[in-house]
Image (cartoon, rainbow, N blue to C red; front, side, top):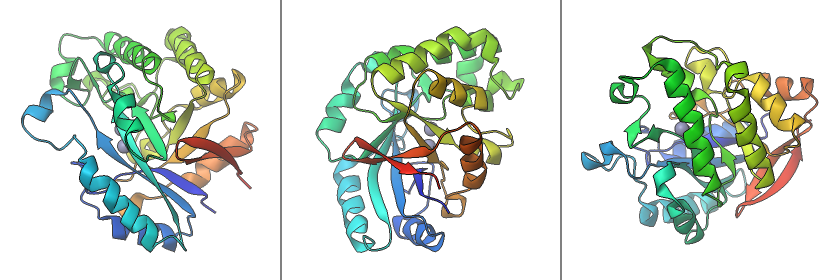
Length: 271
Ligand SMILES: [Zn+2]
Ligand SMILES: [Zn+2]
């Protein structure tokens, strides 16, 4: 049974065409009791000059989610979420936006560095894969230090998906262990979590984001907050590969996943 899917994009995200109604119907069909709609908000990126695809129009978004939340309230609990693109120069802009709106759940994700999206060649030129990976984790660390109103870090090590066009599908955990530990300790001290993002399996990386070692280390260091997200951009991907993720969590002795309401966390037993 799928308890919840906390990472779903609707057509409010520039890279998804799925409507909210279809998303809800799919979740209900799968018997999922809780979903978070987490559309993209990426501020201060170069792409925003050409389009507004990555800027979430909250004046339209929030009322739409509230409406659909009410329509389907008997069958599925819909959380008002957002995937906020963190960058070190944004300071506490994210906090200001989130505090003004009735959010339940926020994913903080590094999608761009120095205003360049990680899936664009411009970011990768003149950088070795190691430089890029280093920069990515440093950006994450600096950004989460200045940001408070988020719930979990999204797809922790998904930088391998782009990988510098010379793919190495797994982060060299030994090489980046120190900075990864520092990020995890910062998250734990701020009462924040991580997500298991199952999209890595769909993107042919054959693993979740983050890799198993990072999830294990988060719990070893005392972390308790974890959500599962499909990162679906179409409704057929909702809840995909969650059984594998639950099995993994059970194998490493994790019994609870997190649920969020108005940014407050509570816990649900996996079985
Ligand atoms: Zn993302
Ligand atoms: Zn996403």
